[in-house]
Length: 188
Image (cartoon, rainbow, N blue to C red; front, side):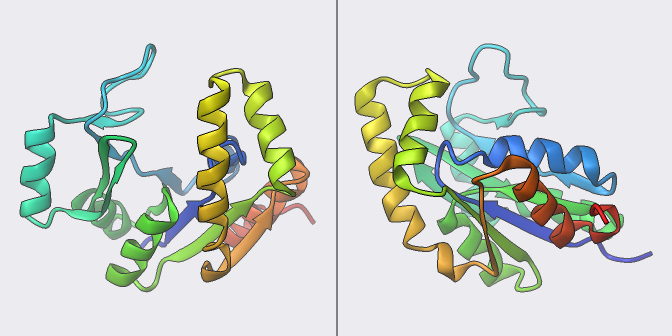
């Protein structure tokens, strides 16, 4: 049995990572999304083990001390991480694994699993990103301003990834992703 591959998707908030990942999972049947752990409380409609593994801060810190995370980070007052055992189990079963994480986590993953492929999703411009965040209607203006500032910092690391995909056209960006991750499913 072949060992599964590991793919890392990064990019700033509002760039369309989650939408692209959902569409990618529909197109690539051997690909599974790794479910991250977090110490933040569940949002309405989120389900433990599906959206995240919701852990207490103490449980998360125990896992850090045990070296159980492939990557972890402190983000906006909460801890987020990917359990190494979950990724290894899936890959050993021949499944390809997709991680949707920030650039810092991507660098941690590549340090521990250098065979991972890192793909960075970028917006056509910061103005476009700001418009998308406003249209989403989820955040207050000051939160959007913080996200744009964070996006500028994140985008400074886009060239460190193996591939960059500009999400200026969703269908085209998805085809680029499919051709990298499951080329047998790419449109001809």
